[in-house]
Image (cartoon, rainbow, N blue to C red; front, side, top):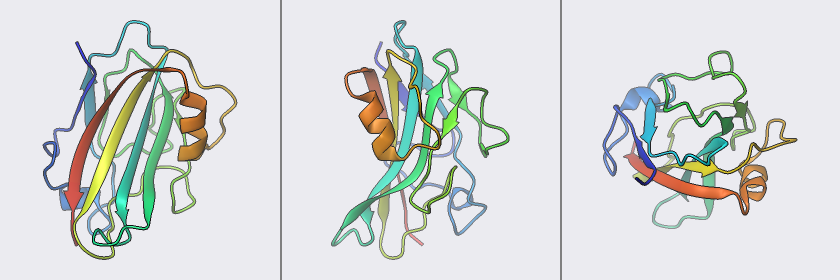
Amino acid sequence: MSLILKSSAFEHGAEIPEQYTCSGKDISVPLHWDGVPEAARSLALIVDDPDAPDPEAPRMVWVHWVLCNIPPDLNSLAEHITSETRPAGVIEGINDWQRPGYGGPCPPIGRHRYFHKLYALDTVLEGLQQPTKADVEAAMQGHILAQAELIGTFQK
């Protein structure tokens, strides 16, 4: 079985409901997954937008959420995960607003795509304190057993 990532809030390729964006409550979407390899020791989640600032002329990938060291026996993240409610042991990274936690879709122009990427790792990532996406990606090198992707879109 391969790693599969889904949300009860939206289907792959569909629009992310407003409540999960800066136009709404700006809370994290509920996510659930199946197919974590038995050899996995942790999971990592990165949510980013490759269409920033304008999908017609993208110049950067905007990072919305970084989590790592998610226990491999966990198969979901509830809606509205915060620093206070994240599962024990999970490390929260820094997003491109330069703060820890989730920052929802907030495109300045056009319809953007939001990639929710889940990685099953053969290790627990050590020595990371509020890591950036780049920090997590570097630490994951050579440790990815499986990955899954869920894409949602949003336009203000």
